[in-house]
Structures are given as structure tokens and as C-alpha cells.
Amino acid sequence: MKKVLSIAGSDPSGGAGIQADIKTITAHKHYAMAVIVSLTAQNTTAVSGVLNCSPEFVETQIDSVLSDITPDAIKLGMLSNADIMRSVAKMLKKYNCTNIILDPVMVATTGGRLMDESALEVYTKELFNLASVVTPNLPEASALSGMEINNMDDMKAAAIKISNYGCKSVLIKGGHLREDAAVDLLYENGEFSQFCVPKVDTNNTHGTGCTLSSAIACNIASGLSINQSVKNAKEYVTNALKSGLVIGHGNGPINHCWNL
Image (cartoon, rainbow, N blue to C red; front, side, top):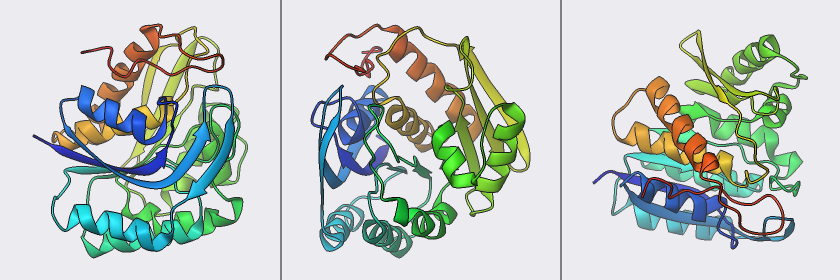
């Protein structure tokens, strides 16, 4: 059984974060492990609070896992401050970890900020050069590249800029760009690939970014290429959206277990 580790924050309402990651990894029939770096108080309507673990305890959690079990892939989600980022980077380097999928979680679907703005420089310097894939959405890609993104040419320029931080590939999620389709752009080895599917008409998109990055991690853990992993993951998320799950009074979660 392939083993996938998620290092991220907890969402008690179950739609995003560690909870979404565990469901996604299990739906892919892999063994899920989790290091929780932050507790959030959130639901489908708002983020009410964030309580961070100490960097030392984050390191202890990671050490407990990696000293005993070697993951086939690692997904990095919410890392809320610079000290936690440094601790995660330190431990990943210590254990020479590979197949790292970095999802730059900055703002929740409901609008709550999940990363300190002051930590962005540490984030890009310490973690991006460890990542096989970085998966920003358009607002995140704009923040990382320092440019406004209005079309596909802008997405390509932003992907190149983000890749200069040292990551092997960049997947910019273009769901905010067009009304009729969800177009994602992968930049890998100097080449671009586009992944386009009809947009699912739903407001229940809570945790889609967490889910996509975890699904990519699962496919990479299975030995597939980055390109094929992205394609498979996008199909998985699209079906999870199409499932039509309705939970909560706001932006509800997707159905991670649609295929079970």
C-alpha cells in the first residue's frame, strides 16, 4: 500500500485541510498520515479562528512519522507562519524527502486569511525548491508572481516566474478565469500543458484546492508522471463536484468519496 503524508491545518467541518486530505488519500486506496500544524475554527461560511502548533511540536510530529514510515509522497497544505515553514523545511531536508506537492493555502474559500503575509518570502525561499509541484489558484499565483493575471498568457508568465523559486513544476488553477470552463495550466521542464473541463455549476467548492493537491500526491505516489497525475486528479475533483453534495449553509464541501 502506498503511503501519503499530509502536513497541513485541521478543518473541523471536514471539507478542507487535513480532513479533506485523509478522505482523498483513502478514496485513492492509499494509507493516509497527517501532521497537524494548525487548528482552525471554520465551517462552510467563515473562518472564526486559528490556533497554531509550536514549531517545536510540528518538528516532533514530523520526526515521529518519518523516523518510522517513509511516505511515497507528501502534500503540504496550510502553513500559517514563517516559524512553522522553517520547521517543516528543516525536517523535510533532514529526511531527504521527495515527491512533495506544495499547495500554497493563503485564503480560505470563505475569505479567511490562513497565512501571514509577512511569511511569503520565507515560504518561497525555504519550501519551493523542495517541491515537485506547486499548485496555486489564480489569486495565489498573482501573489507569488507579483503580477495581475487576466488571461492564459498571464498565467504562462506567472508560472515561469513562480518556477524561478526552484520548484520542478507549477500548476496554476484557472477556475476563476472563465465562466464556462475550468482551465488549469501546468508548466514543467519548460513546456506548458493545459487541462480543460466544463465548469461544474455549484457553489459547493470548499476544499477543492486541498483535494486536488492530495489527489496529485496520490497519483505521484503510485508512480505516475506529474502530467498524468494532474490529469487524473482533475478528473477526480470534477467528479467530486458533480456528485452534488449539499452540506452546510455556505460554500459546502465536495464529495471526496464519490468513487467509493
